[in-house]
Length: 78
Image 1 (cartoon, rainbow, N blue to C red):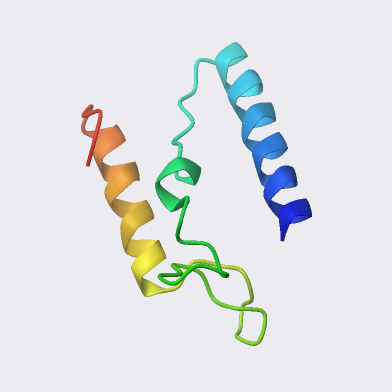
Image 2: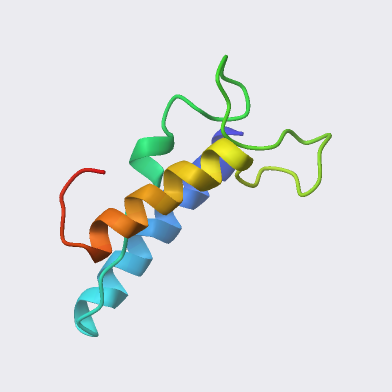
């Protein structure tokens, strides 16, 4: 999981750099997900035994949608 987490952070950094050159906004859903990974007591992602693995479950998708909606509306925090 550490490898995948590191790659996710690298991907987020890359998207932030590229979006800055194109005047786009990248919504940070990673920070809100910290502590809710598949190994936590309160995961918001499906485990490796579920389909699709390592993707947001209903709670994770709801949390992401609140963050994206808040960003669209121009608010700092959902």
